[in-house]
Image (cartoon, rainbow, N blue to C red):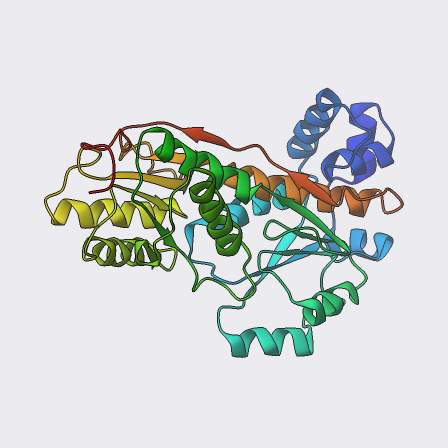
Length: 339
């Protein structure tokens, strides 16, 4: 016969409610007891009935996740970390990839997640109308991109502070011709490129360096785009001695372009990225490290906490730590002053 929750509770010497909380990852159970109950449940062959739990709680045990690009490294890393947290707590993920304007418009018009999910994790930045549509669902909402937003838990970083540390590093090394590879053609309403460009310009101003628009190029937040943008920067009459790329993937593309032009890094050109991509250490890239996976995991944990404690005040905005990681792609310019 199939074991019941009562059988597991009797074997563990606890109540059935304790077994339920332990197996669903709910608070109020010590890790030692949780581990013991999980082992006994596996030994007895007990699995919780998803349909029974749904009827009892009114939940779907599904989290909706909306993304602009499921194939991009940042979004994929956030999604993977969040999914692991949701899965461990017994939740499934319903993914919506809104990569095109048409798909996005259809999603926010029809809102197919209504009554199908218990919470929504948004990895895109909704405008006011889209935000209102998500709030109308009446479920906890979270995001890992953009600034504070009414009704959302926001887990992110200080883009300005990260950019300032990267560009100041180049200034302090003695660089005066500092280019930037941006991602201005990123997802709709994405504020990251704007914040990082603003910080880049502020550091140049503070250092008394006149901004040269020719030293900016769009890299589309991809390796290929970074390579193309670096090639453009090398073609100007007075190319940069250093480049800040708004993402590591664009920085890696820049390194490839420099190698193809037989230029040495950092002897000829210094390069700084942003993210601390898993391959950044492999290529020795100096970069601003942000905890990408941790942002996804924390957003997921906060959503689950809201589901478990609906009367608790949500945190609003959570800022994760960042730091400048110095590696082999930055050094003083070969000749001080503009070249």
